[in-house]
Length: 413
Ligand SMILES: Cc1cc2nc3c(=O)[nH]c(=O)nc-3n(C[C@H](O)[C@H](O)[C@H](O)COP(=O)(O)OP(=O)(O)OC[C@H]3O[C@@H](n4cnc5c(N)ncnc54)[C@H](O)[C@@H]3O)c2cc1C
Image (tube, rainbow, N blue to C red; front, side):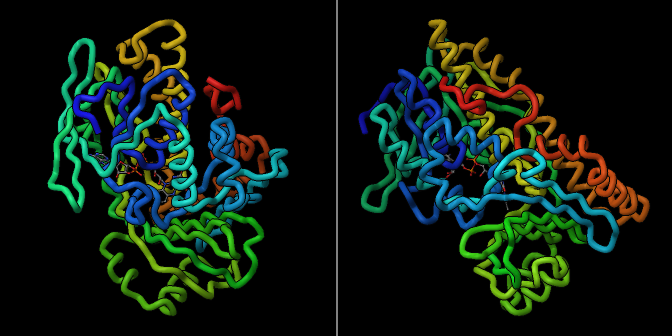
């Protein structure tokens, strides 16, 4: 790598969102670099780990526009029905793809499959450099450029520092974003005192492409249909219980799961290794500073209760790519504050709404105060009885409500 390399766009973080951002910008006349802390296609890459994503219908449309869907499709399991219930109470809401005149409400895909598709696409583009393993260390913004220092570490080399310059820095470096810290972008953080335990489980009965969201006293449980007759499990537990749940043998764990989830799936016969993720809500006060903007988990970290984090982040990607493309068409500087303000105006409403909905769901459905438990059961029942309410719910879950950017509508930039 040459020192003081100059780029138009530097993306910090080559995870699910940073790599998607690079793919979205690939067709534009830009020199792009991604700086990623983990080695290329590393098995330890935390963004492409053992989790699965419930990819909303709207996000699938973005991947289609970016020509990524074909590489993902064969390993994607369609969600044809969503079933929401509340343990120990009456009231169930069902959303069906058929009622929405669609083949699927969304798709369940393993993160590593999406990661492989994104990295293969990036490799095809001469205008994208992937610099890894390398970590952002410092950031300096001046009137006409942004400069960063990165540290490259490899087993055979001692660590080396390099300087890179760009017109625009995009921070896609996740919840503990160094970009956010170096830009002094203020954020608020709420610890849910809950941890998500994930694994792949085999249900006793065929999953029939149903995604279950079950609310229980100890927190929500998602059981999502996936390939090889398996389901992807996201089990919320109180953080003080997590060590206990992780250390259970498989048999005890499956009994514990059945006890909390019930027998809708005919019980569970097998589980893979379990992993845990502490849950919090992080919100930012501003999206950008001169020549720098943050997107994805760097800008919003959510409770996974409704499977919205990546789906929200890919809408950030879609909007930012369009704003940058428009700036290029109008011969504007892509790092200009007006360009980045336009992005913020397009995104803040959606980000605030999704954070509000997931936070309230997490609070309301993890609370055993009796009147609240009754009210939410009524809410589920009412939502099930009124098609208009259900349609609105479905549109939110599918990520196709509100004004959509071009990539979400299947249009090139
Ligand atoms: C249990 C669980 C289930 C979920 N399920 C869903 C779901 O069903 N649907 C959904 O839409 N979302 C879901 N999410 C949310 C989703 O996983 C995240 O929103 C998404 O992965 C965020 O991607 P990201 O690229 O913004 O951040 P990350 O995945 O955190 O990636 C950040 C990247 O930046 C790199 N990096 C960090 N610091 C530096 C640095 N200093 N220099 C260089 N590189 C750096 C990291 O190595 C990493 O590759 C779930 C989350 C959890 C925890």
